[in-house]
Amino acid sequence: MTNTIFSISLWAVLTTICIILSRVLSAEKWQFIAALPNSKNSDGSYNGTNLTYYGLFTANALLISAAIALVLLHAIGYNIVLIILTLTLVLIICMPASKIVAYIVEKRKGTLTIGGAVFTGFIAAPVIVGIVNITAGSALSSKLELLPFLAALTAAYAIGEGTGRLACISFGCCYGKKIENLSALFHKVLSPFSIKYYGKTKKIIANGGIEGCATAPIQTITSLIYISTGAVSTYLFLEQMFILSFFISLSITQIWRFLSEFLRDDYRGDGKISAYQLMSLMVIPYYIIIALSYSHEYKNDISLLEGIAPFKNPITIIALQILWLAAFIHSGKSTVTSSIISFKTVKNRQKKGNEKKFA
Image (cartoon, rainbow, N blue to C red; front, side, top):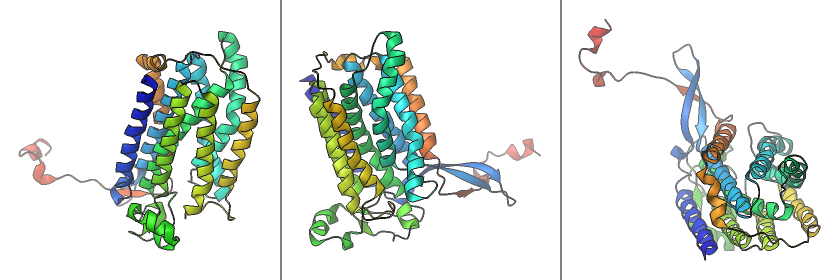
């Protein structure tokens, strides 16, 4: 019953948040959190570096994903040092890959791709688990079993990317096709839930889109599918159905990634089928081969209370905060927008007599 309550609560809270925010984040005010002044201009103004809500929601999503993975892996009884080390190495590979793969595919700087980062992380994860087991695992007389690790990783990824799609709405990227250009069926079904973007610096508008134009709510749909998939996979993991948990989260997320791009209107590279779509399909047979090669049964006891135990340790909280900060710095500093900042005093709000002190 505890596993059921936890999974349903996780799904309900995140789904509610995504539904509410997906209706407001396309407004102009939800693109930038702040602008930090740096170099000064001759007229006294400053050139600013913009910090985005894209970075905030991306960092939040990564934090949620890492926390879920930590709970699941510690619930099964794995060594906390091995868990943190392995997850850290996976993220170290994924974060730069989000820019590198995007540049290779789209030939544009300042662009991030979650699909490319996920593909790279998924390919590298089994290798990383093996290396950690041979090195740190041998030193600690412990090891991570690959299939449960992958099941936890894919369940956490589904939830993380589901919540992370809010970042795309706020920045106006990964946007859907215009409702008016869809077939009659899609037009009728998606029109009530369409997303309209406002603000000249939103990516969709900067790329030639029209403010207030109704577009397919592809990010919202992805959020709901991924969060639901992640919640189901989390429940199955806690019930020790690792193979089922793994294949549900992997297959649904990657198949939907392939299909969803047919409703997207942003540039995804040349060709009718993008490189990102091919990556999503390539991951599935790769992991099927790996999973089938680890066919022995797992008899570890799973305790959800044991899974949340690390969060009582300040070191775990600090590590997650560092992860959040690194993610925010990586994705929140905008390189495709700029700002001009000027400062002035509001004289009628100064206290009388202050002018004498500085005379």
